[in-house]
Image (tube, rainbow, N blue to C red; front, side, top):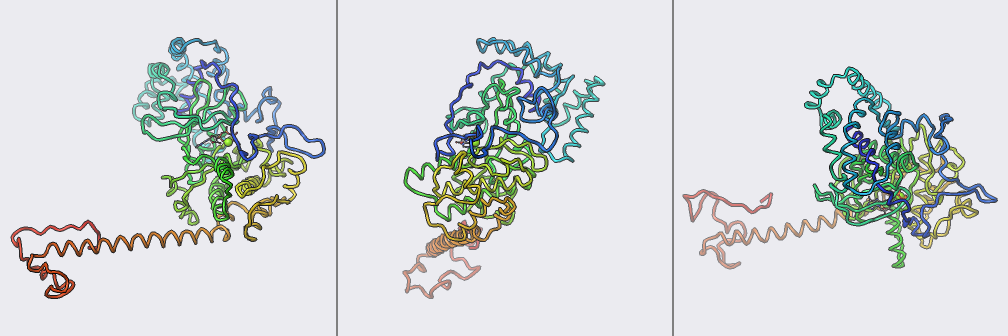
Length: 547
Ligand SMILES: Nc1ncnc2c1ncn2[C@@H]1O[C@H](COP(=O)(O)OP(=O)(O)OP(=O)(O)O)[C@@H](O)[C@H]1O
Ligand SMILES: [Mg+2]
């Protein structure tokens, strides 16, 4: 809740001067194609092609004034907006969009505004409804929220203040007196004060992504900053969807980890895990430059790991809808999250893989039960989604994953529309420039089956023998290697122990091998009988368990 209030407050800081309006697009799925994320734009003459950001829901569309601009039905859209009622900061925000000239003026304005803002926040608490929250959780939080509203009506400020002193930090933020808000408003931007920006690592549909160090913990993060203007734009939808999805999904080794999100100067800012290997798209390009291809075991590993991430997303009742190489991220080292939460028996050997693939960019996520579909990249779009059949949405992710693996296998760039686009969706796969085993070929063919029901589910893929066999072999090889290392270490320790024992013997007994009274353990003094230092306590440590 605190973040929410912060976000609303920060929205009031309508002081940015639009520096990102025309950010260029260097994103590459297609790196492979050199054209970035083309959303299908117009129907082609002969064949039906996907359209721009078509949003359909099974629920009724409303006839709101927002309808033409918002991809989401009015009723839903109103819930999604950061601030919703006429008395909320959003409407104030639009009224207060004066030009700004300097930081000083901005800070002064913020300070002045913050007092009235605080009053408004207390009177008109407006909250976002996360559409991906399970119903039971939502009902509980709605009840709690209603309760807190009633106490607002009672104007029982003292009680709230007392509550704020005893309850959680989040509640504190929401109910502390106005002075606190004023101090907050005078602060530097959260982004600037908390993070040191190192470099821009990507530009996409949503905005720009920066590699940053968090000043407090010294760790690297990927910070996504939305383009301007955020308020009321389609970007706001993307930003909110991404935040909602991350918040509901929690942690999984194969989903890019989310840490925090807030609004600042009308930008949405999302703090995510930084993946040091960049995107799969980058990796494909690097290989192409070196005239190399992903090998079959690597392709299987990729397919298996992304399937694990998808299995988690799908089992949470969500679909990604924008699976493609530039939305799959690589961590070069076993991340801390790679061992722990969200792992099932088939995911236990994740850390042995060398690279960890993670699904990122959740801007198109929607729920399986009541989908609000905003099509992702047309090159990866399943035919049934184009035809607005949303009854097998998880299988659309599987289709996109199949194409992603084929791109890593070396197929030429994917078509955006036209005959080739349709031919791919009729089950005719492009030629792969490397020999793949028949079983793996068959599996890839199945992933791209025109009939979504015939495509395997993410769960089935995670258990697929063709994918797990290699993994088991690799695991066995890894374990053999570890065993050899341990054997060598043991041998070294045994040798050191022998030498230490030898050195501990009195000089008379410290004879060269062959001259000692009796070989092996017999050369040591008898247990309990010490030749030297009998009156002092014995202290021996070899730092090696078992000896
Ligand atoms: N967590 C991360 N770690 C490392 N690099 C990242 C991360 N997130 C994003 N990037 C880089 O930024 C680029 C764009 O990121 P992202 O896909 O999240 O944004 P987008 O605006 O939705 O892009 P698109 O429209 O192409 O999907 C990625 O292709 C990648 O190069
Ligand atoms: Mg992306």
